[in-house]
Length: 418
Length: 165
View 1 (cartoon, helix red, strand yellow):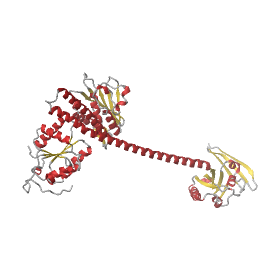
View 2 (cartoon, rainbow over the protein chains, first blue to last red):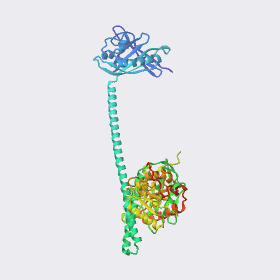
View 3 (cartoon, chains in turn orange, green):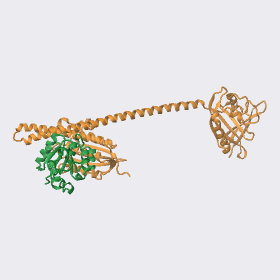
View 4 (spheres, helix red, strand yellow):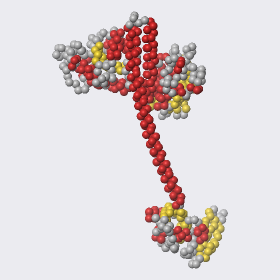
């Protein structure tokens, strides 16, 4: 059922004509329109149109004439309804005329909504931004008889936009500056770190030569002059040798650390099962009969650098057997777990374990769990692991309790993802 | 055993001593000649200057080369050696204090036969001497080019040549 209700009301009788407001339901659409029956200059569009805080206009296609609400004259200072296009265009900012014309022509051609933003000159000569919008009013046989439009002052909105764009630009500039500063500082810092590492390398390297000399002369005296060296002196010579061996192994660890820290990484999928057997060949102390080692196959592939991963893996494995009470046979198990795009490699031992309070610091350089317990560990092994794994984009951690053994893990990207 | 001497290019007197001791302990009978900088090494091999007497300074069967050397770096000495036809296949063992990856790679690229890092202990040094002896002096077959031909002037002296290094 189609409800069609038309009210025709004479809004007012003007000097030279009558304006009507026609409103009603057409289908489920409320339509309101004014019907201009006069060319009166005062309120050609009626009271409702005058009540709207915008310039209301109607363009009559047949008569090629536009009628505008009173706000038009109030705003522009024009004292009469436009007689032609130029009467409207002269109030539009020079730069906006072309886009307005084009938009209007397109709307007339296509019958689609006309929408444009333009600057309109106020009577005091100030241009303010307006948003114009017009819709075709189809009469009988769906023919467009006229266009009904509105022109709203959006200057304030526009200014807020401009201000916020300026703020945004300031923000972006500040952000860029900040990023630049950060990048600069980072590169300075990196340079310092590199220098320090190079320095550490040189120092470590240069320290080995005098150590070699110390050790070998002590050996030479002890062996080549064996008959002349009293037993007590030989003990002292052995102490010299032991001390220099200890220092040498420390230095070698530092060299490994700096090597792991520097140099290019070549990241590629790594077969862990093959890597494990290589590590076992390199470290006889990890094999039977010294150690009971079990690997839960398959070990999932990870993405890593061959040298860095071998270093990290073998450090964890040798660590696993190092801190086991002498009355216990070291037991080590190795397995992997897939966690989405990552693989976690676990290395579990039956060693002394690490108290929770110490688990943070064991990865720091020169930190040792039991420094008083003699010559076990240089305090660098785990730092090397962490550095190597970090450089490969992974993480490292430990689950342990004192006396319960430790489970170290390395997490790296999966290697079997095509 | 190859009767030609061994040339040890090493500036550190202690390391010279340790090598001599180790080679003696390993019963290496070849004479060991020392030179303590890179330029002297080249002079020796070229048989020029004070090394002109090939009887006293015979072409070695084995060169043991340190890398950090005064005047000419060990790798430059190696480059020089391989640039000369008569030394193309002479055995050069690098005995360096550090296994810098760059050094190792470069050394092999330009024709080192072996790269050994100086060990900490005399015991290890003797073991290295033993291995060098057993492998390079007793097992390895030398190509004919490194066996020096009879010197043309009959004095065992190669005419000094100008080498562009």
